[in-house]
Image (cartoon, rainbow, N blue to C red; front, side):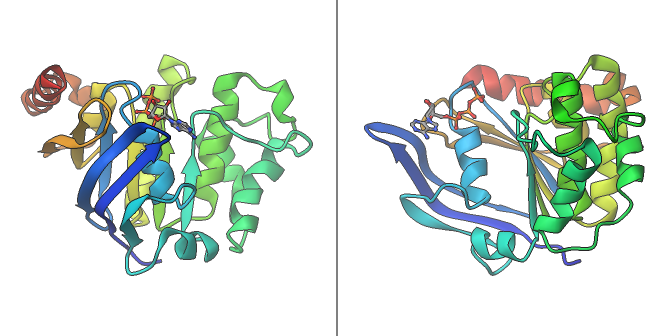
Length: 247
Ligand SMILES: Nc1ncnc2c1ncn2[C@@H]1O[C@H](COP(=O)(O)OP(=O)(O)OP(=O)(O)O)[C@@H](O)[C@H]1O
C-alpha cells in the first residue's frame, strides 16, 4: 500500500440557501490521523462525505494523492465507517465484513481476526438485526479495515459503543491503521478521543465550517487511556477546549 495525502483546495458547499462549508483549504499529511471537532451541524460530516467522493463540492477541488476521491474509491483505496452503519440485513456479520474487501476488489484477509479485534467473536454468523447498535457499529469498523484502505474516514465510529469497549478500541485500532500507513480522518464529539487518537486536531467554526484552530498533538508513549492524566495530554485537551469555546 501507499501512503497518500488529502488536499482540500478552497472547497465550498451549500445546500439550498444554507452555506455549510466556507472556502476550506487544508492538506492532511499522508499516514497521519486528523480529528475534526466542532459544534453540532457545523459541516463536519459534509466535509468527510466530500473527501469520500459521496458529495461533490460546489467549488474547489479535493485530491487524494494525485487523484480525485472517486478514482481512489474505485480502486478500493478508501473506506468509511459512519455513525449509522449500513450493513446488509441478509448477510451475516462475517459476510458483511468480508464485503469491505470484495467491494474494494482486494483479497478477503483474516476476517475472523478482525471480528476478534472489535470484540464480536461468537457473533460472526449472526445477522445485523440480532446485534445491538454498538455491535453493528463495531461490525462497520471491522468492514472499513478489512480492505486495508489508504484513506480511512471515520464519522463518530464509536458513538454507540459502550465505554469499556470504546476504551479498548481506542487502544487497539490506531496501531493497526498506523502500521498500515493509512491516512485517517476522524470525526468525534469527544475531545479526549480526538487528542488520544490523532496527530492533529482541526477545530471548526459553527456553520459554515472553517478552521479556527489547527493543533498538533505530540504525545510521548503509547496512545492509551493511561495518557489521560499526563501533562502533555491535558495541555493538548485544554488547547482544543479553549478553541471550541472561542467558536
Ligand atoms: N443532504 C443535505 N441536504 C440538505 N441539508 C444538509 C444535507 N446534509 C447536511 N445538511 C445540512 O448541513 C449542515 C451541516 O451538516 P453536517 O452533517 O455536515 O454537520 P456535522 O457537523 O457533521 O453535525 P453533527 O456533529 O451534528 O453530526 C446541517 O445544517 C445539515 O442540516
